[in-house]
Image 1 (cartoon, one colour):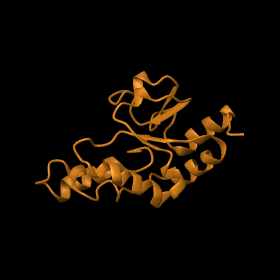
Image 2 (cartoon, helix red, strand yellow):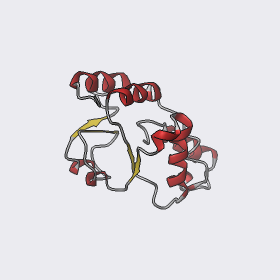
Image 3 (cartoon, one colour):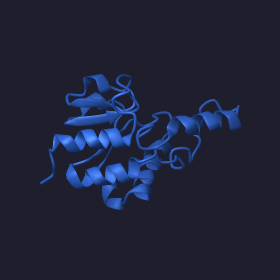
Length: 144
């Protein structure tokens, strides 16, 4: 979710500048809920939802219990209530199974142990949602 669907890093940097006394701004209530969507993320994911069995896998900020509920609220506010049932919060992404994992990091939260194909969002091959969407649509594995 963070830096794939929503703009975590810019918000984190702004919060550090705006509140220099707050060491971990992501721990402030409201931080995760207020994150702006990444360009193209909402439309692309909605298109993928029509083609694939899509889940959102995100590592929670375990030191911030608010992150669990705020990430769930973010999904409903930017998508819909039914999609909240496709939200998985897990600090170790390598425990989950799937065909593809779109993530902005290849290590750190178990991504390197994911059994499917890891798509590194923001990389040269997948710099944005257009590239991810094009790649996945070419794969042709759909719900139906």
